[in-house]
Length: 492
Image (cartoon, rainbow, N blue to C red; front, side, top):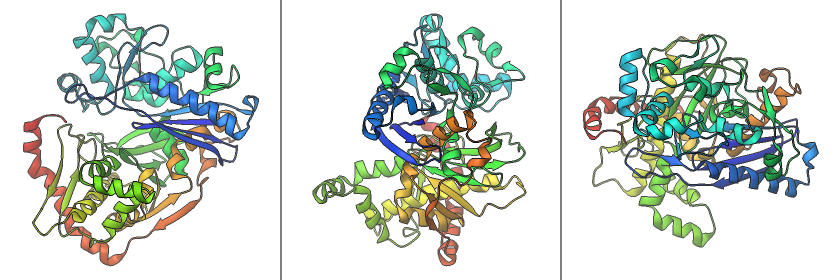
């Protein structure tokens, strides 16, 4: 079974067996483009290129026959929008989840409907297309997200994952509820599948040849990268929680009944065998990468000389600094923010900088600032009287490679941080396991709970927890003091 985690910086491909063991994995990067302020775009062709190339390489390396592949499934970056023609040719680049050009459209939709949409949400993007590129809007056959595009490329017909439909305003009871308000013909929107494990079709001859697979290989509806993370982390039963640390970051908690939040923090949706309460921060490892690329170029060069990862050297730098970074606080809102505050104008900042601080303090403050941000998200979720206490977070993503960062999260959040096996490929493994559920190998998603073992655990330390508490309070209070400045500068 193949699972593909279509991320912001690249795609992770995983081939697994029926027990969830990783047979083959690969990562291939592609670029995002920002032709104007607040614009963030990608070329959809890059995803398909990576998918076909890594699939062929997986078959070659593993010596697995195409006839042995039971199915494929995609976990995708959410909130994107790309218009296509009848032949699935993109008419413009994808407007990614970070694209905030549709601020005025989101404001008008909210005023008309009473919703609390961000400029980064798909309905606002669709309205922007209709108003700013009307000829292209008329020419558009279907408006798709990443899920819809990849499914159409695979099976030759138009549908999308149920999660994608929810983001675009679709429900099984009411259909496309925003279509009338936006003036978007329903025929331009694909009908979502009903379940992630639903077989939406088989590979076309063209797609199969490109991937090296057999024609009619089943393709499941799949879902967001969030869905892949839930399954891949193994935090599937009600009361279990996971945290993802990649370019962005999020927390997801499984519930046996929904909770309601008027501001959408957390966002609650029905998927798998229950409800998921989740909230996403726009920047996490992206902040660390910024530090590496802009403030530690010498470290990158030294890592090349030593033939080691630059992140290993950064971890060593951070370890030299006392917890709290000398009372230096960093806000990780470098691409605007969705949670714990929803503000497309929010920005990063160092607060409390003095001449006593060295570069190492700034680095550790970046790590701690992300931990404060996720602790705030956790606090918002737990403030809904869930009926259970969250003791631990199964943690996945590239950020898990830093043990000092995992310990910082544990000390700031007061939770056990449990890193699962193959954390970089958990999303791809998780979405591949959706194939197994769709084929009936597993009867329910709950049968996959704790499928991947824990390989490392950081536990909160009492002394450090107490030290971080006042700084965490300062972090939360900083937004109120900075929001006026942020709003004056506009969206990131």
